[in-house]
Image 1 (cartoon, helix red, strand yellow):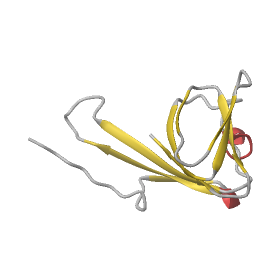
Image 2 (cartoon, one colour):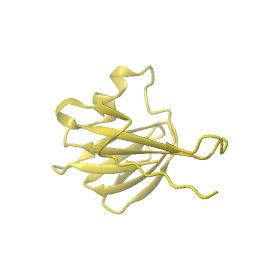
Image 3 (tube, rainbow, N blue to C red):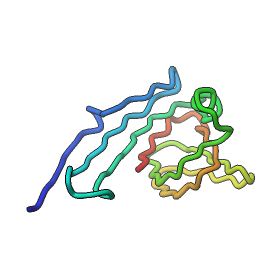
Image 4 (cartoon, one colour):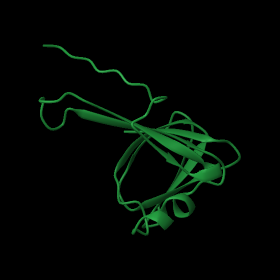
Length: 118
């Protein structure tokens, strides 16, 4: 039996706000009974100038840097990733990234950064 599930990020399962610096919306799809690995979660983050992992996330978690692995696509704006070893990447529109745990991020410039993370 074929299946399809459709959701809209405008009606998220979860939202996280960052005050004046934006927010993130999460949608998860999954087919019950199909087993592990048949679930997909997407985050849409709208991060305004001034947003940073250190300012907006780190104070609320017990980690010095992000412990998560990310697959991201930058829709607009520029975001800077700094790995714990000092490696730095500035990613702009149409950038696709694989990011290992042990990093921080911040919006660069005066433009809002929109990122898809899955």
